[in-house]
Length: 310
Length: 101
Image (tube, rainbow over all chains, first blue to last red; front, side):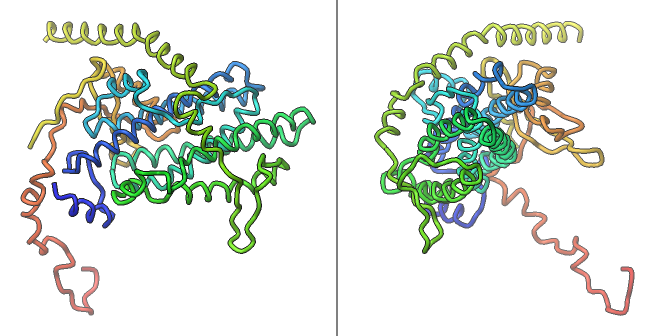
């Protein structure tokens, strides 16, 4: 495999399809990234799924059910994309369950009030959109196509969150306080979703050269900050960052220092909910085993009956 | 030509999903999914690929039954069409004064 020719090809915006020749590193990087992305989607069902039975109205409940179902769907699109690279879905799930593949650190934080569900939609899905839109032009065709579907659906996720947040922000003093506290809890972890600063992100340069990544972590984070700060102002909420200010020269908002030691700790497994999230996932998988076995047994019986009839 | 390898997950075969977005258009590949049989593959495809009325008809095909041209042979395989520009209407010169041609 001529790596130079491959790099030239992806720089020329030619898309790579499943059975094309590709460098081993490119395949490995994609499998790891797509699997981690898929795991994030299905683990991401948990913080909000907990609130389905406690949603404040039937309208909010129906919206939340649809949103959580979408997250499952996003996971499935992405596992399919990983499989086109030769990965086995069961193996990927085993790696997740064994703690050998990661998912986004953001889902290791608890959703402690209804306002957190609103904040997750607004901030977490908002940050995810900023991260994911450039991936719709990623050099690997199946990943890019999955991202097109996902981005269309994320837009509903972000808007329903912002709407729920604005209802609370315009509500009673207690509701306002709930909204502000949820923003206080989720703002910094949402900023960490873009990953470490570019100087500390060793794989970034290679991913850029391969056309998997289009913008640096810091560029994307800046884009999210610039979009979100005015939205918080509109809601009449205060960002939990005393150093946040608008740079008059560039028009960009500058945040204070992100606490990367917290990010590292959550990544290592010491976030508020790491163990709970993984245990829940493993239990759901194990509890569902009889369903998969029954469906497989039914399919096998059906094939036999079919063959006898023929 | 090569048969795609049959991939298994939980004993469930992989299915390719094709969706007709509305009447009058052809089915288009939407993605893939795992299901133990054709009936469940259809149901899963409905839940996975048409949650927002993206389709009025779905086909599911076992991925292992798809026969595909090989990317390694793509030049040789498609070459025969490369030197036949006369198959396109733009190949022909039409005098300006001639209409409806």
